[in-house]
Length: 406
Image (cartoon, rainbow, N blue to C red; front, top):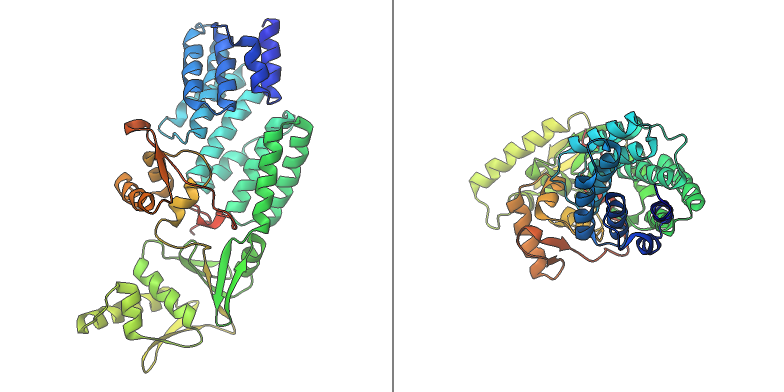
């Protein structure tokens, strides 16, 4: 490695992309192309970065498999920043194995962290946790240790494990301070701000109250019967009944919970659950069927009692009933939360993260664009979607799979 390449690599490690470019901007040999690609990625020009990294990978010979593997890892990080999930994870895993075989533990760890962050963005929390659990964090460079701890903190936050998240953020801050990379310190500060912002709303007989992430975790462990509109289900004392795929039952449960200790009349339940303004006997019969299903689902947590005018939800034991509502509601809340991270998303990436079809996502984006809540950049296959950051509250509980579903 010549002196200019080494100096450029040191500048990139310190976060000085412009300093790195000054040293290799006029060179077209594969090592210089790779460093230029990484520098362009740090400056936010991801399309140019991807092109340079591809050229660098093609330029390395058959005997330079470690260098090619490093290019694969760098390209995977660029794809992550572009929210491009179309590539196969196998190429990244193969690159990680190659780097480990050559003793390049730092870049092999970087590849595994990219895989874990990709799983987090897609809402696959269990898989991300398994990937992180298999990492050996000892001996990492300060910058890589900071990234690893930030990833662990985000996973803990998405699972509402507050104490582990706070501990990981302390370690991330210490590592970022040792690395002296401003972007890492800013990322730690941004994540710390989530603890001070409202994350959800508590709705009960006393009214409505904003809750932070610490308060939400305390509520879920308080023994109250929680009808959770963030992850769409009913829980108490660790027991959980998911209703994300049974919207009618969830609508009935939420209406009954918000009326507790009172009841809800039949017409109001029909209008809310079935979206029908003028019910007839067939709708009342359907209501009785759905109430029966809800009663069977929650029989170990609560009872659904018939009253003179409708139905009421009665918890078993001396428990309170609370509705945990997200800070913003609507069918597109999770979509807006994903887009508010400031990165450009394609419809295919959004569909993967939300577990929905691309057509469903396209319809939702069209509605949001009509309301000026999102905007598109690019055309055809290069089209990406952006939304302004959501200020005043954190989107942790709006993200897909924010909490475990079982």
